[in-house]
Length: 441
Ligand SMILES: C[S@@+](CC[C@H](N)C(=O)[O-])C[C@H]1O[C@@H](n2cnc3c(N)ncnc32)[C@H](O)[C@@H]1O
Image (cartoon, rainbow, N blue to C red; front, side, top):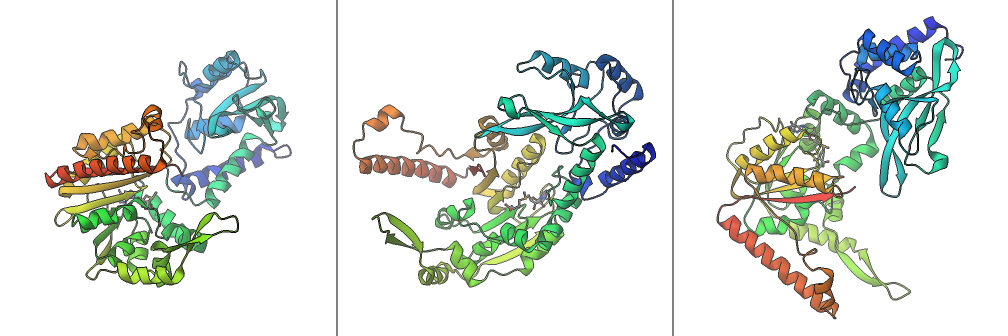
């Protein structure tokens, strides 16, 4: 920007504003109500500075938007306004340096398993031509030497960088109800052979596979893969004799699933059979036995399975007859609480008495509050929620009573069997159960 004239800056701003309004950036950019000129002037008076012209222009067009970071606002009296946040952070420990004026809030990694607030700030000590400032980031919880990071860019250059990143990155839409955004997302994923392979592979550890025997034993055969994306896991279930419907709002994703087939090698990787092999230090290692894995593929085959991959919306999908099982892998956590409650009710109504919902989520394993919100919606819809207590049931004291590991394992096994017997009794009585798998990766 140093050398850019006002006219050049203005032209570049218009270009970036256009790209923000168009896909793919518009799928991850959330504008807000434009800021009023009088509010911007009030904030400037409180801060006793002139805000950079191109940042002012951004606020007047897009308001306190979101683009990977949350922009602060300029509404007088708002706790998230630039002057309010600056005043608060000046008084906090460690105090925000006087020369910084925060304008957006993001997060940064501040230690093992720990994220902290990170503020994007105008650095008043580093002005450039045209009333612009260079930008710095301020991460109060980071180690002292890493708290302040000077970035050698102006607001416009930072924004251009963000927009280019958003154009390059293939990201799901921010608003999970943006079905065109999902369509674009899957079209771009399928264009990239690496991503396509990664996102479509059936998962050896998925909840659906782990519970397959339980479903088979109970005669639960008609299964809906809800919000399936391009996962080929439904094909594994068809191979095992299930009557599978895979639904997704993206026509491109559904077409891919309908037209794909799993090779024998892909099935063999799902039904991997292992040999126990002694390593040189006498440790036991598990090694895949490819011949046995292929034999297992044949053994697991149950004739009569079928797969329909359809394009449809979970909020309106009306199946012909109830499902025995609804499986949703990572397809609910992006919705609002209210939408999740609607879907929990729809899943409940879509299951036959004694039916089971398998819900796999991501990145909420360590957030117990969110886990409770999530499971609460399903309880409210009428499900009984499977609590897998076997691992937590023994506290330290009780655990200490078992001197032999074998006895402890046997106690776990009995406890788990009792829990499943209770579930079976409830399912036989017509209750509908939901099994959660909250993963952390
Ligand atoms: C994060 S992806 C998960 C995909 C897949 N289940 C997996 O685990 O890889 C969420 C999926 O939900 C789909 N989706 C979003 N809203 C939907 C809706 N209203 N009806 C059906 N599918 C929807 C998206 O298209 C996307 O494929």
